Image (spheres, rainbow, N blue to C red):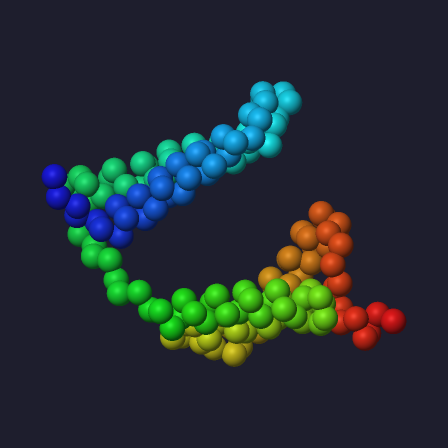
Length: 153
């Protein structure tokens, strides 16, 4: 049996590995029932869904009719830039607030793309900041500073 679509096959195996890890590590907690869920219930169900998703992605990659695709080389610089932008967000959030930290996250991570466009990134920043603000601040009512500390006093 030959792996024709390497990208889908290895992605599927990654989903399966994460799903099994979630299910394994959640077994230290009480499972509960669907009506009264324990702390292990959600990670176990999520892990099971990841395993099913992994199988749905990986198995078709083995078919003879699958499109032949190779795994591309990892761009470690882009990976570093994205990880750096997440750390930057975490560092800026308590001092500069959600809006400015989110804009910094979006612009910093956009530099990882070889197709960076200031205009497109600005549009994405506005849409993502407004959408995230609606979900996290208004919808879920999470308690974190929206604006810089020095503006709210």
